Length: 138
Image (cartoon, rainbow, N blue to C red; front, side, top):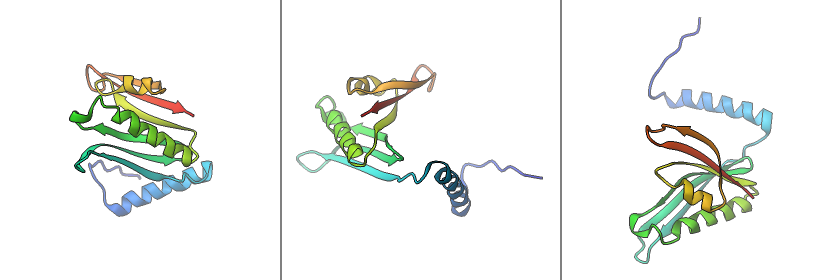
């Protein structure tokens, strides 16, 4: 008989066993995923962080996990610069595109202006808003 355990955390050995098992399955089906992290940090003239982007490339796509601009730098074009730099790095990594997600109270319209197209949406996530998935193929 199989037992199920529900928790909010697990030990690292169990996490590794599950992750390694999934990675082995995926590798057999699709080849190596060649994952590589990406960080792009923007600093102002005083060396303070003005914004940043966190992503990772996997297979032939770059996923942008975070794009944040400090309040005093919003509207300055910094978000466009960070995203363009990430796209250039994706091309250098031989990616065929970039994908990301954004809440409707964040910046989906910004991404659309940068050439991204919506390919998925969950309404009321959170209630009164939506979570939107966007992609840009090179």
